[in-house]
Length: 136
Image (cartoon, rainbow, N blue to C red; front, side, top):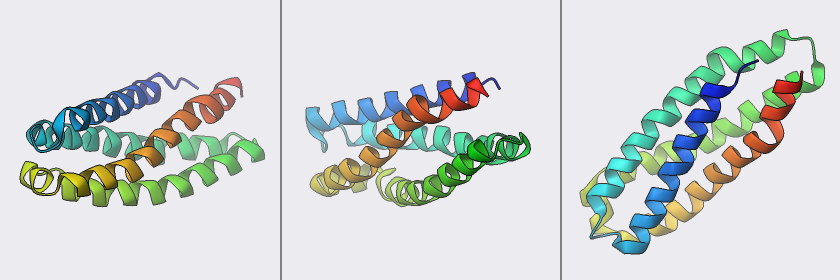
């Protein structure tokens, strides 16, 4: 199975997380518009990525006849639903520059929590999940 588009989307998500981290270090209130723009852009990539996974990747794993990989796919899908919910709430709140500028420390705290989860998940998929799919 070719996972290039998934990997490309992961790269875009990781790039956005790095950009948000950079803008946070430079000053959250001063870069509120940039932060909100990156949250919106990252949200688009995440929504597309999750939709493609749910529509194509996970069903394909269920049909492959490899119970271990199918089970892993179900586990990853379930875990991602929880992370996606947390990210959705984060994005809804922080996709507005006024909200970011009005509560820089609130943004920082929530970004540290939610983006850390997302970052760890993307790395885990790249390291543990995708190689197994490609080998099967």
